[in-house]
Length: 338
Ligand code: TXA
Ligand code: MG
Image (cartoon, rainbow, N blue to C red; front, side, top):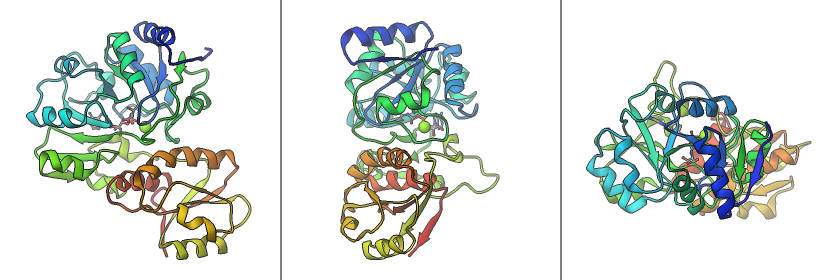
């Protein structure tokens, strides 16, 4: 199939909605990363998402809505905490897991009894959902295992010939995927960190459990709370190694280990002392900037022909927890303490 590139105007949004209503696949912009959308209530369309991405059959999808009024039919019950969190963080980069209703096909949840729901902040995304008149199932619009896309061109590179259309809404502002929490437990449990931080969540619900898998590889035989955590993820073509140390120690190590196609993924503070080619992904203390630049930079480094990337380790507070969570997976948890 030929993949059409659509713009963000009213006409093209209607075209995307037509494609989605007719069971097709369309990559759409959100504030976090681009999503590969299908009508969440159309079992076959949802199955086609898994085929287009090469996604494992046991990794469930997030369902996207454009207004809180669309939530009740999709879930069995809405815990009070969901309303309180929605009031504060929706629309926005927060995904909440609840028990699913009969309306949600098994293909979305991979047979599970819970469903993940999110209302994106990106207005184009909400317009597409509204125009389609259906909730949209959408994982990140990359080939499974690869780096999530933050531009329409990234989507085209991964999915050209595999999906009906890609709607170009410009570059994603958050740059990495939504915070995922389970609301079927009390207290709520953080399964995937994102731009909505642990402290943000605590300010609304008091207590938040952070799942082991957020910063540690799963132990053999342990069933993950979020299946997405068990797979190799966010991997560029290059090998990534994280270096844990201050600016001086980092630059020293990288300068000594430089060579052909060896690149640095550093912070702004490191630039002046580096003697190898680099991309900076933000300031040392600027988690939001690091989030915005991480996936973009990993894809750039691949384009530059990197074979080895030495990444400076981010701090684990605030949004930094999400940056570290993604980078650890890009590196297969390979960290060198300096
Ligand atoms: O920001 C985002 O969340 C983006 C945009 C497109 O909205 N979407 C996204 O989807 O990141 P995906 O499929 O790449 O990641 C969804 C994660 C996976 O780790 C999956 O295992 C988990 O959410 N998940 C989905 N439904 C779940 C459920 N019912 N229980 C536990 N984990 C679930
Ligand atoms: Mg993904």
